Image (cartoon, rainbow, N blue to C red; front, side, top):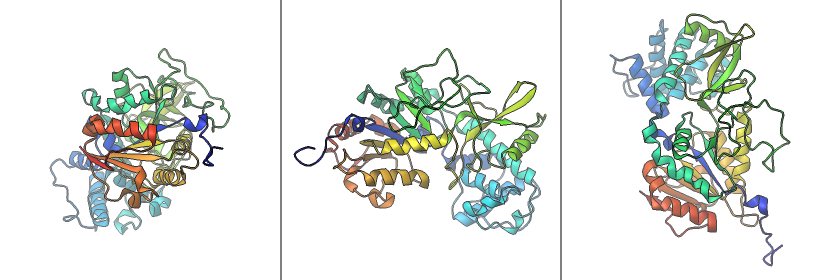
Length: 436
């Protein structure tokens, strides 16, 4: 105990001093669309000759849709009326999930809590066509990252130099590969938990810190991939809480049809409608070296068909997936938040309640009598009027805002100076809100 009655933080408490939490605004400037933009793009793609109605023009559907196009337009109109605004792509996906005949139990958990009578007898195949088209467009167009646009993320990645003995932890709610591409261009070794990108039927995602984290359970038995580019010393660790555009889930037992919609029908039935939500647990994951433009990846082993379906977690209240590796990543998010001095939150709209709960708990539990408190640096295009009240955080003096486009905010002198001050002293003379 010190003379002031406060014990000094031990070596373990000095670890994990800096981490990042990324929302859609962190990577939108690299090319991927936001969920609202995805919905608009999808409707424009589906109805190139039609002026899609907004909330003021939309009306509740009155007849049973008889085609995928009619159904999609009916869902769009219904959501516009119900929400009072244009829906985002996740709300469209969850509406499809809710009205499908095999997933009605999810209705109370989505935006479509009171399904119109016109959705009671829709053809489930029409729903599946919408879902597969939506996911196809996501992989081919909406999540595309332009290599020449990722440079603005360099200042974020260079934060790993603050603690040479520690890896920089980046938790992201995004599916795109912008951080991976930026690390590659910068020459910084990163890991997303897989030891190698080679596709393998017995593959299991392996996180680098298993067995190293002082609060973790004993190392578990895993199948390790062997690859020429495998590295044991990443400088940046990326935790993709909602999956990734290049992660594919192993779906055994599906029949190889010539028509991709028939394949999707079989695979969807196997997973009970939980392909891109947290409705079902994930199977073994495989990773392709880059995002694939195809929805299905097929392999033949032991004369059986093995289909791989993109593992991205959609939805609103259903994003928490209680399966490895997702539950492991949430566990690590919680543990690191409770040992971090600075958490940089970029482009996150605080719409995911399960993430908010972890953030609030870690922030509000931390006191100076135990260790240096957790400080939040919010980087966003939009300013939070009263972030402590809005986010349910106990101490407004530990919340800092840098307001402006991510590209300008990360390159602004105040970003590095603020992070440096908070790491070294737990405080800063910079204004609580800096506009760039």
